[in-house]
Picture (cartoon, rainbow over the protein chains, first blue to last red):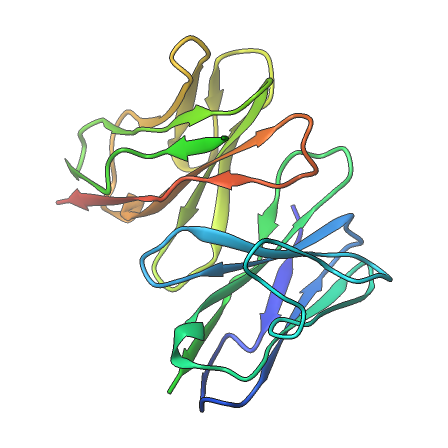
Length: 114
Length: 114
């Protein structure tokens, strides 16, 4: 399985500011995903990070609010823009390999917006 | 519509007793089925999966799950629960024809009492 790190592990931010979360994998992966997990809830897919092209966003999520980069096969960033308290969540990066069925998750970034 | 149901928000089991965490699904085609565990303040860890073959699959930490096609279920089991098994458990499903995207259950909080 992949070793996945996320930075920062947690942060407390003021409303109206932006935070960029990094996801680094120890091997080249085919797929990278960003999820949101609100307190006590299940996971919601934000977008699929595509290497070298624009991310594919799920319904309810837009690029202006959650810009994503994926410059190579081992790294991606998610920015939470113009934050409000409703953005307080755990943000999780996950990865998948072509031909392999399992997704592996990073440790998550715990965001609190005041 | 494709969906995953975890009918129990919480399951309480005494240490040493067998445990079951239930999952049923509704997907078109043949599913890939997964269980993940989330310990407090941690990311998601992969436990086990069913892809094909033997209906009983074994995973990490002594857990196993049984795929039942007629009942469209994939219940997670362990013969003897440990206090350290206390965590949040998620069932997830993927249609074999899909592009890696997972459909998630709501999660079940497992509490093991000494």
